[in-house]
Image 1 (cartoon, helix red, strand yellow):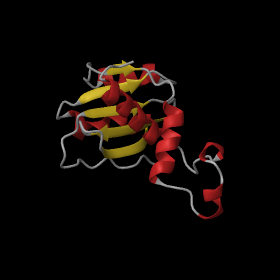
Image 2 (cartoon, helix red, strand yellow):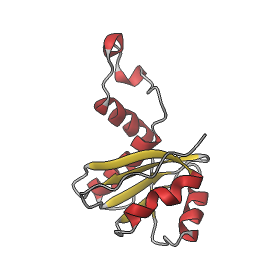
Image 3 (spheres, one colour):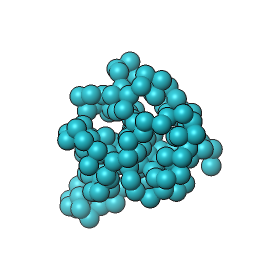
Length: 144
């Protein structure tokens, strides 16, 4: 599967770049200090460095969730020269990612009648999990 192109830089300044690490792919989200989502994507580990380049040049805070596969992602970031990545707790972010997904893409048709807790998004939501990691950090101001 070819990797997607890098995220296009937004005109608004990025305050937080969050990564939801995985074994084969990562969710990436870029948020402003006000918590607005500037960009989000799901990228392969191989495309992570080129995806992050435009955003980390401005030196925003880099957050990495402490879930599955965070060590290889941290190693990749360190090897690329980004040594100030902050490892943050990602407990509960998968459920929050599901809630965010359905908030931005509400169910249509007969699916509207089913409680959201019973619905499963039709695609991976690693990008929304990265948004949840960033929002959790921005709300608390700390990595935990």
